[in-house]
Image (cartoon, rainbow, N blue to C red; front, side):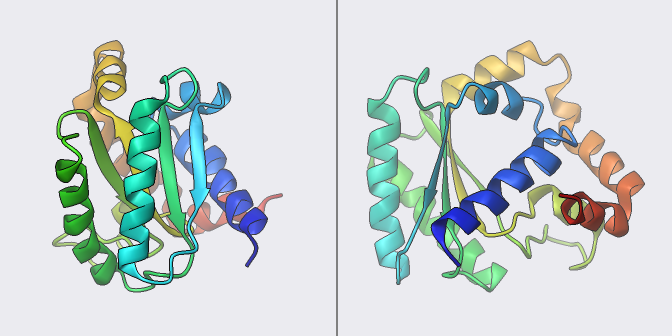
Length: 180
């Protein structure tokens, strides 16, 4: 798969699911202003991906938010197994801490087989964090705080997302991506 194909699929997911279903009410504003950096990783090993994470963290904090507000570090092949990716996230969080960025940058994660603890693999609620590829999402804490302040019921987002996906169902989710 080429980088262009990975980016196209990631953009479709962002536009049709994340923004289109309003799964993240904060995403549209930065996306339409081209403040979302999309990076396709070619790391062959987890250690290489951690080095790329190092670089992306440095770039994000060194760049004004008006240019790059958030970064999606996408890896199309390294973590086919969700549990392996989930284990890797603990190490990635450690990298954020090593950079002294706790409270400055937070990581969110997405994966094609994302599964919340205590759910069945096919539970539609898992789709709130399902993406076409394994993704580390680097978010500026101050941007998140501003967005939450502007959104009166931020605590309800997760529950609203679950309701949205339950109404949509598996067939509806698939239909999002079947349309050109």
